[in-house]
Image 1 (cartoon, one colour):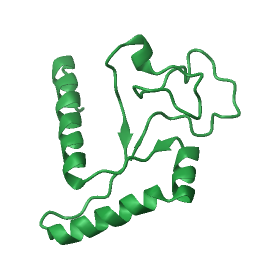
Image 2 (cartoon, rainbow, N blue to C red):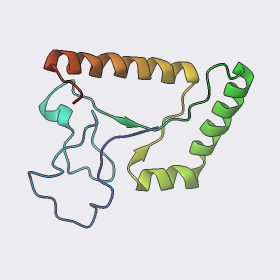
Image 3 (cartoon, rainbow, N blue to C red):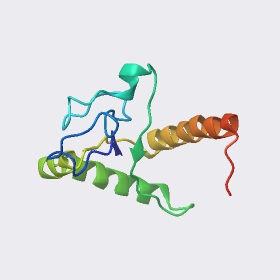
Length: 122
C-alpha cells in the first residue's frame, strides 16, 4: 500500500496555494482531483509513503506466502478498499518480491538524493 499524498483532514478546508497545493504522487488523488500532482510541474517526480507488513528474516517462505495472500485478499474487500480510499491510501496488492524491488529502488533513489545534497544526521 502507499499513499499518494497527505490530505487527511483537509477535505473541509480551503487550501491556500502555499499549503497542500500538490500531491507527491505521480497521479492526481481521487479525493482531491483539483490538486495537481508534483509530476504535473516536474515530470518524473514521484514520492510515496508506503505501508507494509514486515516479518523477521528467516521466516519460512510458506508463512510469508500465506500472510501475503491474506493481506492481498483483505485489501481487495470493498469495505476495506473504501475505508483506505477515504484515508487517501491507494492499496496495491503485490508479492513480496515486487515490494522488495520497490523498496530497494526507493532506497537507491533517496540515497542518491541524500548523497548528492550532502545531507548528514546531526
